[in-house]
Image (cartoon, rainbow, N blue to C red):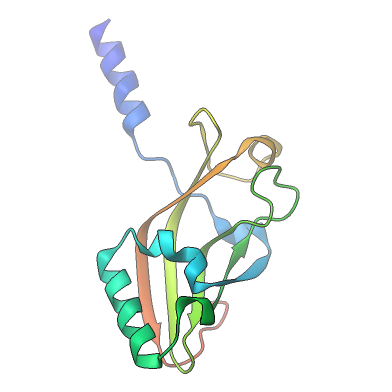
Length: 142
């Protein structure tokens, strides 16, 4: 019986697969300040962004970004923006990609777009940030 409990615990502790945000099919603009909580999960990214803001003499509310957007059919997440993000600092762009996890109010995760996910997903968690800076405007394929 203890073995079954241990197995169930390990299965529950296993990381969920990331949700593929490219399937959302919509983009949406937002300010850099709107993703401050996401960037705050990486002190290194936060330092780099602060340095670039200082160099460009801009505030976070003056830097426009784009992210994928949940369409209105998502009951609780409609309009929410998620990774990947592209932010324009004026001649320099920041691309941020994250592993995205969706969950309902009870902690159940959703890995694909399904009617159940669209109705019940309430929470978005973005982890495992990867980013790069470029002096050329990124294309949709980057």
